[in-house]
Image (cartoon, rainbow over all chains, first blue to last red; front, side, top):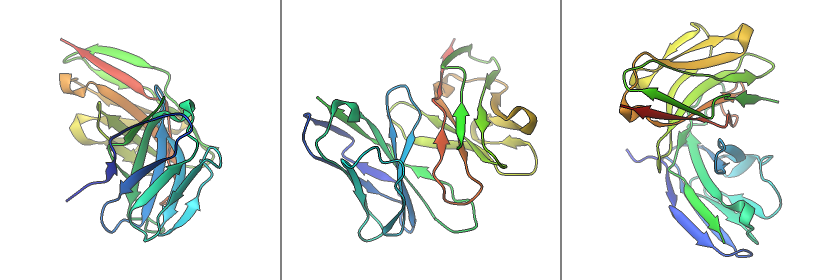
Length: 116
Length: 114
């Protein structure tokens, strides 16, 4: 079956512009995660959704970053007034989200964002 | 707070040689521990995981890892490396509930030479 997909695969933008990154999770997965991977670093958590609601957004670096998941499936990460330091690979992962069980996170290929 | 340390940024091994990648974690209780592999342009793929029980866990592609509570370590091993194993390897820790986000180490880049 289809895995987690992310679009676009690459995004180049100018400083100060607004960008949206999209994540399509595995069908039926209720949990969805966004991570950011800067060059030479491991992925760092940004936000986690359970269904339509953000269960944990403690990793969002500032109020320029926002994410939505209006129907509990596709999620969009939105970055306002982009800065060069936002350049990174943005990874999305999804899982079954069952409580009381381990739920493996399946990762998408990522969106590489470059802010010029 | 959880944290993961991977002390080796880059390791080079000869094809057919054995491999050990180090991982140390910090977590107050028994953690969930993971090793992921990331090839260029690819997403993260789970190699293996530890929750409880047998401290030696087997994974895909011939990898294994051993959980040592006394050393707070979860080192990844493979007895004979293949050229296709060249990739970035990440150790990660999760809280012992089902849905918490993972905390990753900075990764170890593995190069394989003939």
